[in-house]
Length: 201
Image 1 (cartoon, rainbow, N blue to C red):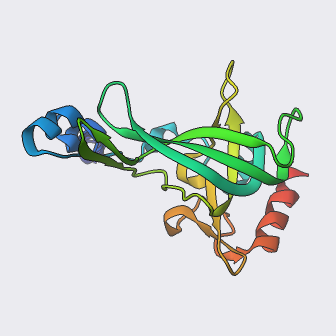
Image 2: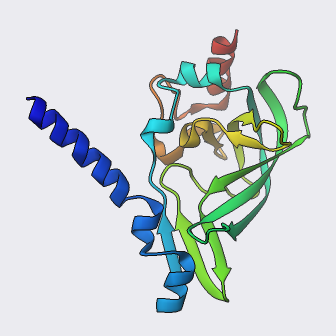
Image 3: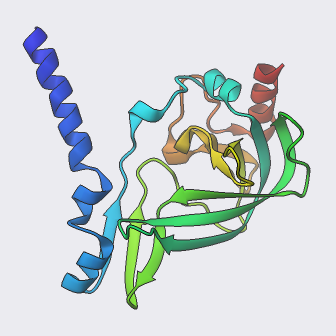
């Protein structure tokens, strides 16, 4: 039994390596552009870095939970030319949880997420994110943030589990259709917010 467990663990680590951005990219984006005229990479969801194991854990760990709209999204190639990332600007409509009074209504929160489309040497390049959805300008979301130390910028807490899209019918959908244990996916916005407020108290 111990041998099977060790084999399973080794297989999981191997899969993680195989699905890493560099492994899927067959070299840097520049290497691919030079070879075939375009470049594509993908990121793999790293389960080991997710500290939150349930929705209540995520709410506890998150400093800022805000409802608002993506006003800008600009993608660029990273300095190592291994992937594309997207810089977002998010206008806050409402704060559901807010510690230290850092964010107010109508403030702009800037953050960066993996993935996006850009160009390199005039050729198209893109990165498909495996653990963070691409966000769309004009769309409204509930996002969970924590500030980056010594920086005016923020990061989304919990990767995909910190992103919830508000649909036109005022329902709230989890990214990729999945959520942590206890996440109120596919509920009305009112029910979703009430679930968070109950955990914040």
